Length: 177
Image (cartoon, rainbow, N blue to C red; front, top):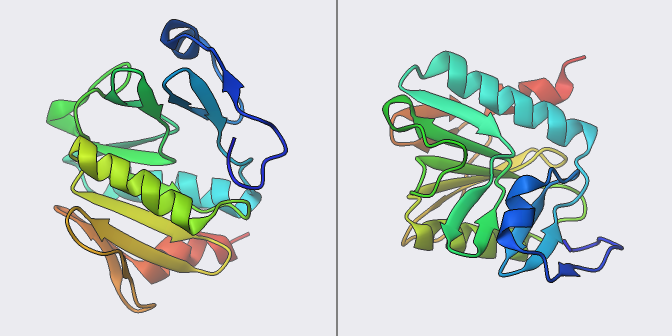
């Protein structure tokens, strides 16, 4: 299970069972082992929905969705908080080819080192850009394949090819009622 979780990993789960079951909170599937993602907080949930809305309404060549399992390889499925796919390349029911962008939103129980490792898996799969966003501390990073994670300054923007969102706009939802 995720860092800070009181639940041990569940082992011996078949990929068929994983794909046929809805887990709350979501679970990554790691070669027969379920790793539960931390329970989302209010800020996490608000930010997740807001990022999807910003991408879906502001960038017509992309479609964003939350909690979609992606198949990194046979027997390994990860669940990013948000993914963005090009509308002309939508993969359903879940992506098996690299998506345009993965977004991970930190929860209080997350360890940033574990999220960076998860980002590395997305990069190895072929995702060029991953965003990591911390709603509690209002910090964000872009992690591009082959580069080190780069923290975005407060007056900067999160970017991925064809997408740019000012950080002030990203975090505006944290302060909204």
